[in-house]
Amino acid sequence: MVESIPYIGPRFDNYDIDKEPVSLRFQMMNGWSILKALVPIILYYRPYPIVEIGAGSSTIYLAREAEKFNVKLYSCDKSPRKNRVYFKGHTFIQKFSRDFIAEFDDYPVSIVLIDADHAYDVAKMEFEFFFDKLIPGGMIFLHDTMPPSEEFLTPTACYDVYKLRQELEKRTDLDCFTFPYTAGFMGLTMVGKRDPNARYWEK
Image (cartoon, rainbow, N blue to C red):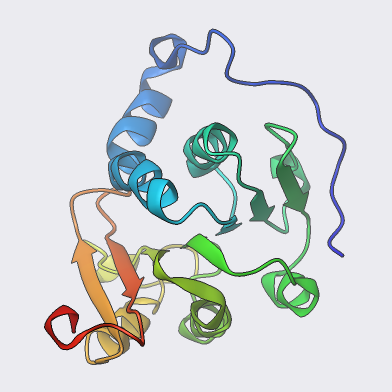
């Protein structure tokens, strides 16, 4: 089983986003507006665990909805300063994603956010592992897949994860759409898993 840190108490009692610094408010409202809108809808129909590769401001939204729908949230990040647990069903794993994946056994999952190492090879490995574990009707979100300019194609920014988006857009076993106006204007690709038993008019 994966390791976790102790629960440090509720985070959402009387929480007011307007009291956060302006920069964080912008990041939370614009940066993850798609997550804010879609996560509760997905969980309503597919109440299974959420996995987040790369913790950060997105964790606040994911934790809030996971707690509301009584599903587990797994947040994986190599950075010890992000080591924070938001509710009793939240597990933080301070490891590289390949080590986390080697131990992960709580599936199917309904939502996966991939936003850590933006190298194509790493993101592809993460995507392929979790796409196999994704419940039909679930969603994988890939961050930084449509950078606004070429200067963002560096290892410390969006790097070459856009190549994974380009591959996924050509596949016929999934639904793929990229929304460029959120996630810090770096692009958020949404990949839905189709039901293999779908009727002909649903394909």
